[in-house]
Image 1 (cartoon, one colour):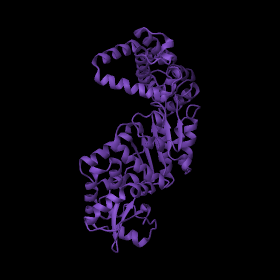
Image 2 (tube, one colour):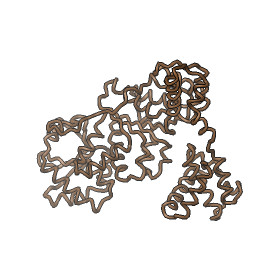
Image 3 (cartoon, rainbow, N blue to C red):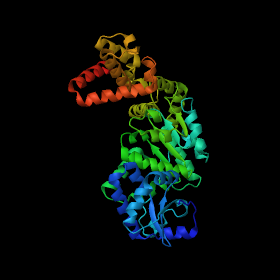
Image 4 (cartoon, helix red, strand yellow):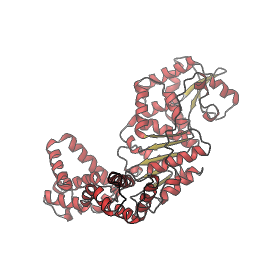
Length: 453
C-alpha cells in the first residue's frame, strides 16, 4: 500500500531518525547491488528507511523514484528486509522542503554551501544582438520566476566563448537578488568529480544527494561532459528529477544540442530537451562592435569607432576571442604610450589576422578528402556503401566535426543530406579505428595536416 500524505508529527520523527536503522538500510542496499543495475542502486541510495509506531516506511525523493521502486524493486527490498525482521514496508514520497537539512545542521555535518556565481556577469552588461536575443529573453524570463514546465530546464547551447556562461551566471545572480539563497552553479566536470570523490572517500551518498537536490536553483555548465560517464549520469538523472518535480529552475549549457551529445543516455537527452532549448551563435558584425565598445568602457579605454570596426571585421568567431583582441590593442597602446588607431590595431593583431586568413571550411575538407582517396565530390554525396567510398566519407565527417564549429546536422546536410545520427555513427567508427589501427591513425593524421597546413 502506497500513501502520499505528510504530517508535521511524521516529519518530526524523520528528523530524529534512528542511526541503526540508517545502517540497516545501507546494508540492504549493498546486498541488492549485485542483482540490480547501477541506476536503481543510485536511486535507492537517495531513499531513507524510517520507523514510525512500528510501521516501516521507505521515503523516496520524487514520483519517478516511487514508480520505479514499486514496479521494479519493492519485492527484492521486502525479501532483504524480511531477513532483518522488518515486515510490511511501505513507500512514500518525502516532502523535503519541510525539513531540509535540519538533521545535518544539528550535527554540524552540513557541507558548506557556496553558490560559485560570478557577480561580474549580469544582464546589464550582456550585449544583446540577433545572435543571442532568444537566449537572452529566455534567461530573463527564468530569472523573473517564469520557469514553468515549458521553460524548465532552460538549455542553452552553442560554441565556445559565445556568452552561455555569462547568461547562466546572470540568471543565478538575479535569482539570488530575488530571495533564492541556495542557487548553485558548477560545471558538469565538477559535479562528476564530486561524485567520484564521494565514492572513493566512502562519504555518505545521502549527503551528496541532499547537497545537490536541496537547492533553489541548479546551474550546470558544459553538461556535455557527462557523456560516457554512466554512474554520474545516473546520479544526475535522479537529481534532475527531484528538482524538476519540486519546480526548481534548472539551467544547463552545452556546446551542442542535447541529442548530439555523444554517449549521453536517451533519458537524459529527453529530460534536457523537454523544456526550452535555445542557441547562441557567433555574433554578427554590429553586435561585435557593440561588445568591443562595452568592454573598452570597462577598461576606461577610448576606442574610436573605426578601430572597433577593424577589430570586429577581423575577429568573427566568438566573444572571448573578440575581448582578447581588444586587450592586445589596449596593451599595445599602453606599451607605446599612444592612442588606438587602425595601424596600432593591425600591428597588435597581425598574428591573429594571419591565422584567420586561412579558414577551414567543409568545402576545404571535402576537396582534400577527394584528392587523398582519389574519389569524386559526387561520391561523398552518394548513397554508395562501398568501402572505397564509405570510409573517405566517414573520415570527412569526423574531420568536419573536429575542425569546424558546424553541428552534426549541418555536416550531414553537407554530405548528401544525411541526418545527424549518421554523422554521429561515422564519428564513433572513426574514433574506434583511431584507437585500434596504428596505420589508419597515421593516415588520418596526414590528412588532417593537409587540411590545417
